[in-house]
Image (tube, rainbow over all chains, first blue to last red; front, side):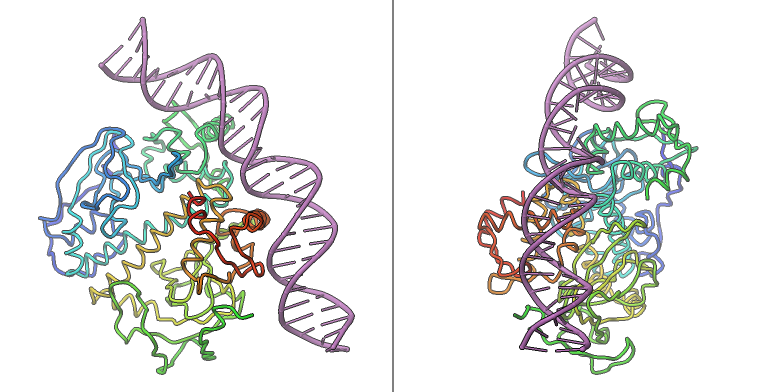
Length: 234
Length: 234
DNA sequence: CGCATGTTTGACCGACGTCAACGATGGTGG
DNA sequence: CCACCATCGTTGACGTCGGTCAAACATGCG
């Protein structure tokens, strides 16, 4: 089971570490790595399903790129309410979100492998190298764009619209051959969409009943009518 | 009665966003640890209450700093539903959110004066100057942090918790002598908090009834028990 | 096999939205 | 100066979408 991202070539950058303004593009970590000396390319580490990668308010020692698996970053309230801000899939960078301390927890949705780079190393590079600084800025802006879209979803969309938006997002991010497998459970989806797991389940059942969704099992999904779904997402 | 905003100097600069060499003032453009060079200090422009500053999907020609007044940045759905992502108050930068096109609309909540800088100028500077690049990165990260907090609010907090969180935010950002005047109406607050204006009104009335809030009028507020309110915000 | 984890589905409920009426405020023009 | 009107805020009655609680079913692993 490989995701679309794993199929992408990931050139491992032995390129001039100097300032190359060209590094601003749709900065993939891969892309931003281009501007880093090989010594910054980081080591690999694995986490078991459910394992915490870092906790809220912990020192932000590392920045992470997902190699395989999936990661959720969340905020928690004392009484257990949880808001997942984003799911990070292969190719995504996370842990960059702060200055010196994390402001969210991150944990593995399934068994997950990441590449990690010392936060300080990146930060030092960013202070010297304009290419690195702009690559990091592009990453922050991309996260910001996602968060802004998600605020609209959380603040103003109905349950149906939220779930459809989510399915389209997952389709875009991890569909292979028109089908994808969700790494996360219904509760995670609910905590991402500001719903309960029951509501998520009901909406998916409803869409399945309508025939707009194919389910070979609860996690394995194929969108049968993307146009219709896009209209439903508002 | 005068609001805090009315007490601020409001240079009326009735010139279009073109040339004004005279526009050099206190330089908190880039209120982070990095500061921008004086050459990047832009010209001044004013907008009437309700006037659009830029629209969704328009080319992002300028970046703005609020000098006086208040600005809301929103996303709209076709049927009129609106989500306000942020309010921008004096000292705040906005319009930076994108690469080449805006992804939100921005309009003046009240009569507002801004300083503006050509987006391209900033972008060029960021490609050359590591300090500028990092200043812009810091701004993006600050907006991201706010958006993440706001996702928690929109996804998981109750109406009471949302309104209290909002009041504490406004208190922090614009209280003078322990009191502040809201520049925005109940509908704006609702669209920021993912509630209806009626619910916002009811919650504020409730808090007022409990004595935890002082209201000399609907917009003029004093928090009588910040500790209690902080506890209520969860 | 047995237990833990996850999903579905139903019955019921409550927080918040909707609709509507009324009141307060302030700007404008006669 | 006041009458008028638009905008904004408050409050009540009622409806509903999604949450809560609960039970049954599925899946997979030690």
